[in-house]
Amino acid sequence: ALAKTEIIVFDKTGTLTKGVFKVKEIFAQGVTGEELLELTSYAESYSNHPISNSLKQAYGKEIDNRRIKDLEEISGRGVIATVDGKMVAAGNIKLMEKLGIPHYNSEAAGTVVHVAIDSKYAGYIVIADEVKPDSAQAINELKKARIKQIVMLTGDTNNAASEVAEQLGLDIVYSELLPGGKGE
Image (cartoon, rainbow, N blue to C red):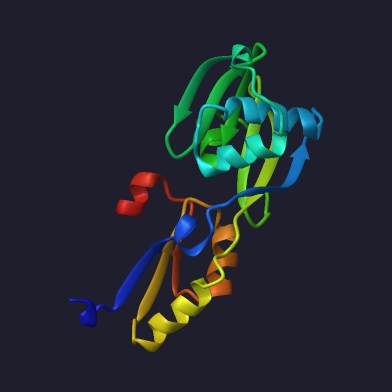
């Protein structure tokens, strides 16, 4: 069956990339960058998702769980939590759209976490992942083995996905997918 394989599909994070995210940029609006990172880290504090972990690591301080109430995780979109009496929504553009919050469309290459505080857009945090050192070689070897199409699936933005696809020479990219969309 493998000898007849013509198409290979990869998930990006942790397969083609290291899955180790780091905060790359903070754009704050109406609050300081430090406040934005703090409130976002608190809202994301109960999640073990690599993006959440990178936010908590960048914040670098211990999380006091007594400051958090009413945490709700919205699969494939983000989280909403009350932190110090403020409603903090942190997630992707789909979360902002679901909540009806006008947002800034960042062109940054990376995962963009948009943040709203008390239903008002407060900015975004860009988190980047690194391509694994052997991914490009593996893709080249697959092409030499006559694989016709190499496809990447990711929940990342089009810009972030395109950057990785270009680095690796991938044929097709499906980006901004929810977890269920990857299976479909």
